[in-house]
Amino acid sequence: MIDLQINVELEDGTSWSVKPSIGTYVKFERQYKLSVQSLSNGSLALEHLVWLAWEQARHEGKTVPPFDQFIEQVGNLEMDNTASPLVDTPSPIT
Image 1 (tube, rainbow, N blue to C red):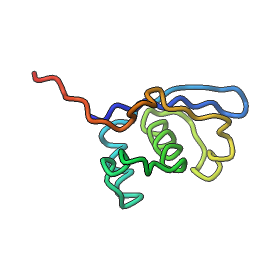
Image 2: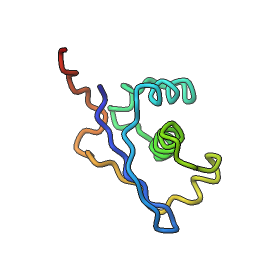
Image 3: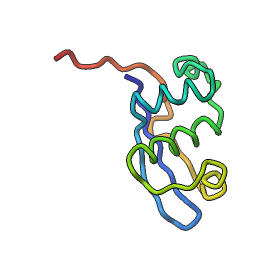
Image 4: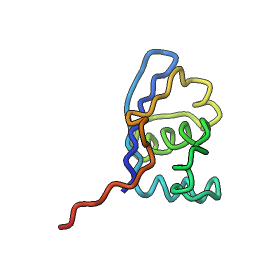
């Protein structure tokens, strides 16, 4: 699994964190025609990070505006694990 948590703070002071799901990563790959794994080489664009946060928020049922409006509302965006945000971590064997 990819280990990435995104902390979002909007201009109005609202803040929340999301951890993209597998479904969100697949939607990302379809949207941008990029493999999520290819982003681990340092080519993660800010737009990609905002999109992942936006899409995961929608997936979790948060009320968010259309993407272009959401961009204008974001005051701060941080990755919780900046050392290696897109490194595969082994899934536990069950």
